[in-house]
Image 1 (cartoon, rainbow, N blue to C red):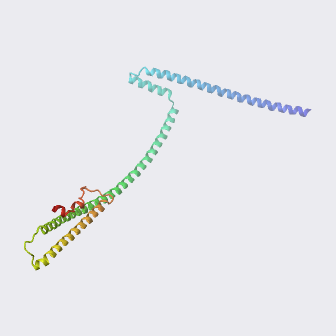
Image 2 (image 1 turned 30 degrees about the vertical axis):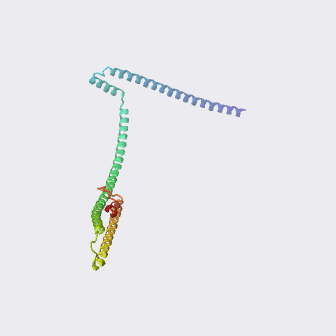
Image 3 (image 1 turned 120 degrees about the horizontal axis):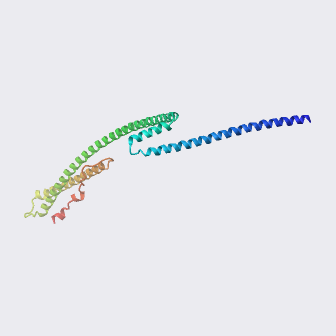
Length: 247
């Protein structure tokens, strides 16, 4: 019986201690809540006073000097030194971040400039090389065109001579019988001359075709930009039918 009473007594004592501790926590919480409420009321009052003072400053909006003085007075009244220190620290961090970003961008810009200069130098070298090749090809094509023109004139002269020879042969009417030497040698000589002229004309035509092929090959070179775009006449126009012209 005494043991149970002692145990109950200890339990009651422990419960009283717990109740006392809880009451202390409750009082502390209540005091903290009251302080927070008071702080909130103080902040609301501060904001209300600031709004009132700011509204009073608006009355001097047309007077720059007095408005400046009122705003300075507001700053001195409501901005605390601790706030200034915090703002200064924030500005320092922003300045450091800005400096770091600027240095990073400057390094990237320098790298890009070097790359652009290098690429420009490579492109300039390629451009100069292509222009030199283009000039040499144009010179070669002009020389081939001059040769083609000269050969074409020679072919035209030979064809004209051949037509005249054939025409004179057809129009020649012998009044007397040919002698033995004339009958034996003159037709053969004329035939040989005509064959020789025909071979020369054929060779000239082949040479013209060869020159035209060379010009076309030069114009198909990549990067070639011809200065003159004069089209060469076709070989068909050079071929003259002697029989049609004789008629």
